[in-house]
Length: 415
Image 1 (tube, one colour):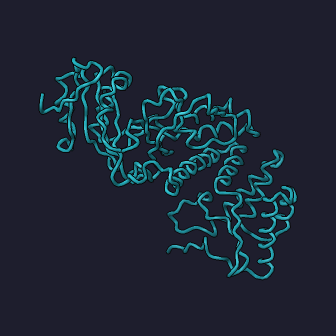
Image 2: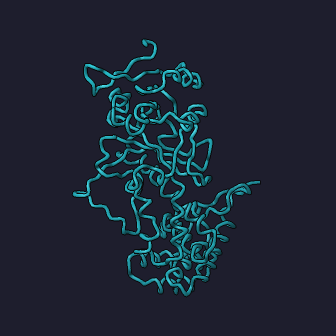
């Protein structure tokens, strides 16, 4: 029998309990307003006789600032987890670790009046928990940092829903047409045969400055501003679970654009000197934004790349926090002609450099262009391996001798 979720329901306390809750709420508000110090907050909390996970967590938070009290911080964090589990278990199947998925920190004064106190905030609770575990040299540190980085990712996705700067959310049903220039090799064939799009870790990209988070989370950079050096390795590893797949698109229309497969530079750089192929995908549904159905641990989001100049947009990575868009979709302006969009994927369930995403998440092939130097004898082989080839249009690129820098697009049935 499942236990009901009482997370959002007020707890009925006796008069003393209500006074304790009110004292705690007022103390947190005073601390947030810099009216009392952290040590004063700790003294107040120590005097409150309530067995509540929030009290233990606040104690852990306070102890975490002094290295002498690392063990006390760990003890209070474990007590907070214990109290939370006992009060909030929904069923035997639910993951009992999810203190990070607790609802807002609300302190109920009585049945009808409540003071919402969102402190520490969701993001900070994850970070603090991870720091405490990492200082204890516990594997829990990596786990908590994984959840911390996952929260950053999900925060981006939900922000996209509510803010007008969401570039592709309006196209979630219709889809966005995106072009991928590929070498003709086993990796490309594997994706076509298995009906997948493979994402890869940013460190494998051809630009070492692609995905600035890679530079920001380098230990030598973190050491400049992270107070507790022992947590750096765990924190740095938490960002190994992001992967990327890049495309070119008309970001204004989001529709098919024949000027893209005519781009000589893209064929030269990314399709083995015109010996490869260019695939036009329709990206929609959960690829635009969502938790994948085939792998519940994977979240994906389609984002447009921003291009910055060093002259007018100086970017420093010597800071405690990095904005998500700055971390994953900011590139130097020299790349701006590529008009890149990218799938950003977060999946902590695999340690592999490459992570294939199945078409069922919102991917279909609309068109395939064969480079002007693609082996003619292999064209039919590519067409035959596609399960849905009747819905795909095929083209062959050719040289226009009357306008040599403008490629000709020939439908295959006219060859």
